[in-house]
Structures are given as structure tokens and as C-alpha cells.
View 1 (cartoon, rainbow over the protein chains, first blue to last red):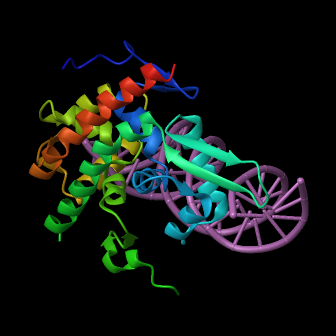
View 2 (cartoon, each protein chain N blue to C red):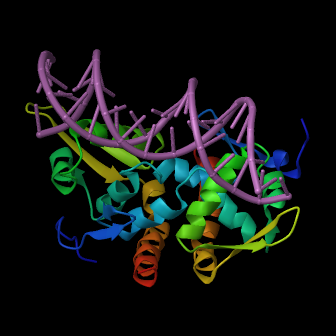
View 3 (tube, chains in turn cyan, purple, red, blue):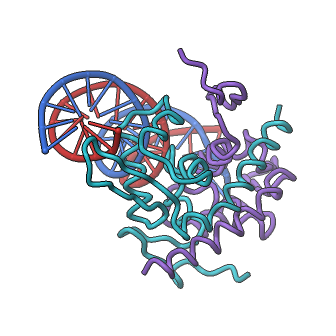
Length: 118
Length: 118
DNA sequence: CGGCATCCAATAAGATACTG
DNA sequence: CAGTATCTTATTGGATGCCG
């Protein structure tokens, strides 16, 4: 891999510039809850209220916000049922599923790291 | 307080609690420059000034700060030469090297993601 | 039920200047 | 050369309340 000298291949994503794919990945899943959301959604489609239960220590607002961004970035699919009371289901898109291997590794690395550093 | 099933294995790192290894990993490499620093250091030992050149768009302060945290977390080794002018070399520890595969995947996922989402 | 708007608190990051 | 100190700004996260 070539140690690219700075400005050569700058990438633009969401109106910001990134010099490396790593930073893009972090921009997508680096939010406080995003990685965990993707992790949980890997189990299958969930309603908003399901997610709320899983993430009982966050607020509706935060969950909504993070889900919106994940949706905008195309990792999560949001299906709204036109009914009262509302029903909204979230699921992973192809892109959302494609990051799962990385999350898996991050999960085990984190645990291992913690074990060794104590 | 409802004991959700997940409360069982809460992990503590740097006085914060994490429910998942993913979040620990993000706590370690999620800083704005940390992942990139680790990525560059994988090329070999570097002096502070080398890193400054690589990260010409950040400040000394930020670089120092991020390096300090990486050092505290045991990912980076800092060797100070007792001389004037000062000479400080940074290199990856075993732990720092162990995260490389993840960074690699993050790098290629990020690029791929960008390609597909445009 | 699911979500938005507003306001506020906590961090993270950056500018700038000084130092051994 | 490789920092530190201080101050300011930007970005995130959170509390709370209203709405269709």
C-alpha cells in the first residue's frame, strides 16, 4: 500500500473531506449509538419501540437522529406503515449488512483489548 | 431500574461503561485522528515531526493529545531520547499492531461504500 | 407510536502563544 | 524539536415538551 502523500486522493462525503477510507467508515458508524444499532439490527427487522427497549439508556430523539443518518447513508431501511397508531420498521440494507464483519471484529478486538489491558 | 438482560456484562474502560466490545474499540480508535495515526505508524517508527508532516492539517496540540491517549491505552510506544534538541519516536505496540486488520477492512469498506453511494 | 423542535450540557477540536 | 497552557469554537449528546 502506497503511503499517499496528502492531497492526492481526497474523498468527499457529506460535504467533508477524507483522506482515507477509515475516516469515512468512522463517519458512518462512529456515532455514539450507530454501531450498536447496526449490530442489533443484524438480528432482523425491528420496530422503533423494539430499538427503544434495546437502547433504554438513550432518548427517542437520539435514536431517531442516529437512525435518520444511517438511513440517509443507506445502511438502514425505514419502512413506514400508513396506519394509526404509527408503525415503523427498521432493517439493514445490503450496505448495512456489508459492514457486519467489521463490527464483529471490532467487538471481539474490544473485548480482547480490555482483557489484556487490565 | 429494570435489569435488561444486557446489564449482565457491562464492561468498564477509562471509567466509562460499555455494553459491547464495539464501543470500546470506538473509544480507542474513534478519535478524529487516532485511526489514521495508527494506520500511518504501521509503516514503521516515526518521529513526532514525521507525523506532523503527515498530518499537516492538524495542530501539534491535537497530535500530541491523540498520541498521548494512544500511549495510555497501550497502542503506541513513545521513546524519548534524552538529548537536545529533543527527539521522540513513536511506534506501534503489539496491541497497536493487532488492530491493523480492522483498520484495513475499514479502509476498504469506506472506499467501497463511497463508490456505491455516489 | 413515532417523531420533531427547542434549549442546554458536555466533549472534542482548533488557534495561539509560550517553553525546556 | 517536541512539547504545554490557555482560551475559544464547533460538534455531539441529552432533557423536555408538543404533535399527528
